[in-house]
Image (spheres, chains in turn red, cyan):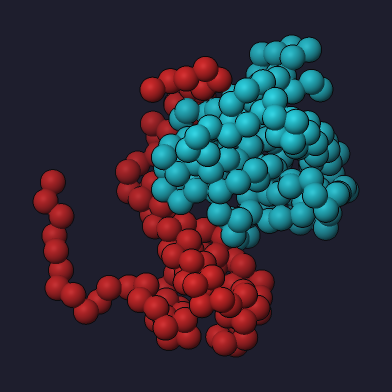
Length: 100
Length: 163
C-alpha cells in the first residue's frame, strides 16, 4: 500500500519494464549467494581475512565475491563449502521441478 | 528550498526500503538524476545497479558486503558506494542506515585515470552532498524527529532535509 513519502518513479518504472525476469533472477541469485556465504562466515565467527587465508586468496578477492556482483563457479562454491563446512549447493537431494 | 527523503516504491520491498532525496527547487529526485546522466553512456552498468537495488529491496536487504564503506571523509558519516561491477567504474554513493534502510544519492563514472574521488569534480560533489545529508539524517535520528517504523522497514517523522 502506498504511504506518505512513497514515490513511484516513472523513469525507474520504464527501466524496470526492460528487465526480463531471467535477468532479475540472475542478479537475485548472485546477491543471495553472497548473503548466504556471508551468513555462514558470521556463523563460524570468521572474518573475510580468515576465509581468504583458508582458500589461499587475497582478501580483495573475497570482498569481490561477497559484493553481490560475482558469478560463482561450481568449483569456487565447492571450495567455500569445504572450508566453511556448510551446504551452499543442494546436490544430494532429488530434483523437484517447480510446477507453474 | 525544501529537500526531503522519499521512499522509492519501485525498488523497495519486504527486505529493505530504498530512499533517495527529492529537491523541490529542481523538482528532481537525486537517483533519477543519476540514472538520466548515465543511462545513455553506461546503459549496462546503470541497469545492473537498478537490478541490484531491486534485489536489496525485495530479497536480501542492505547487507554491508554489497557496499564499499568509508567513502566519505569522516569515519562516522556512513557514506558508502555500491560495489562496481568488475571492470566497470560507475559509482553510486549511498548512506547505509541499517540492513532495512538504504539512502541512495548520485555519483558518476570513475575514470581509471584517477585513484580517488577527490580528483573528479562530479564524484567529489556527489560524495560531499551525501556527507551533508548523512549529517542531517543522523541528527534527526538522534533527536527523534526522524524515527524507524515498528518493523524497522521505514523512516517516519519529519522527512525534510534542509540543504
